[in-house]
Amino acid sequence: MHRYFGRKSLIYLLTFIVAVTLNWLIPRFMPGDPVLRMLTRSSVSNPESLAPMREYYENVFGLDVPLWQQYLNYWSELLQGNMGISVWLFPAPVTGVILKAVPYTLALLIPSILLSWVAGNKVGALAARRKWLDNTVLPLGYVLTATPYMWLGILLAWSLGIVMGIFPIAGGYSFALRPSFTVGFIANAFTHWFLPFLSLFLVAFGGWAIGMRNLIIYELEADYANYLEALGTPRKLIRRYAFRNAMLPQLTGLALQLGVLVAGALVTEIVFAYPGLGYLILQAIQNQDFFLLQGVFLFIVIGVLLANFIIDIIYVLVDPRTRTGLQGGTA
Image (cartoon, rainbow, N blue to C red; front, side, top):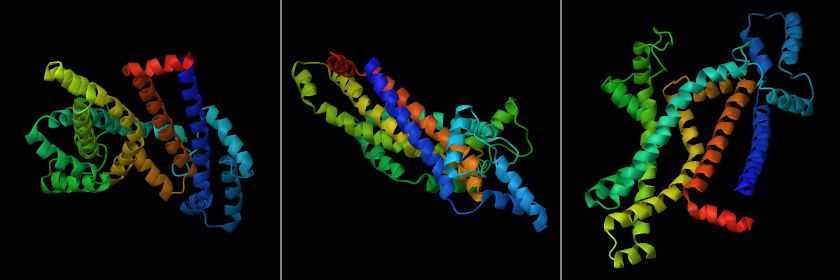
């Protein structure tokens, strides 16, 4: 187990280093000059004043040194927990801007990931042994899993927000309110949260339901299931074994789908103008804010890597065959 987790930790560390390097490089390949963009928004138009101001801001953002030194400075600041200063919201630190948006993104991701995974697996398992449910869930699941997050979000906003007027279609809460832990604000924030959550939940639910339905059918036709049935084992017990075995590939699929779900959440936030990390990415691109873009991508990379590492640990704990293989490899 120690050797296994040691290898996994090394792989994730190398992945993190490569991801951080790409995260630093990509904004610098983007066209435009963030300092020049920042100066054009100011009221200063005198060329004699722009030159010293440009020099000042380049020094503040660390852009007045060669690229190799910028890269080393980036790592040095990152290890100290400093992601730089936002160009768009100058002089706000990037870390503070991201921390304000993170709760909104996590409020969408965590419930949509967990509830869609649990509900999709349960419904898929039921569809594998109930014909009427299979005839409805399977076509609906294919439609949902093939639906783009953005298109479904627009459809939900139009139908439930504009036509029926049940839910608001933009923002994280009403602009007349101030964020607080009161019943009124939480209820208002819930109405703004529901449509983005529903679009993420439905797309992911369809994929999990189809996957579990197919896996259950495969497991029920496996040799061990036929052997147990020949011995007179109750059908309910055979299905329980089939469900447990089918859950293992679904755990692996959860790790592989995390990046897709995160990307879907970012797009959904843009559709609903939800004040999460997706909204920050859009604003950072529009304002050529290298440092905010780097910070948001870095947070996403760290979150996905940590979630995958946790799923790797859960997989080893859930599947006894994995532990046996690890013991055999160590021996």
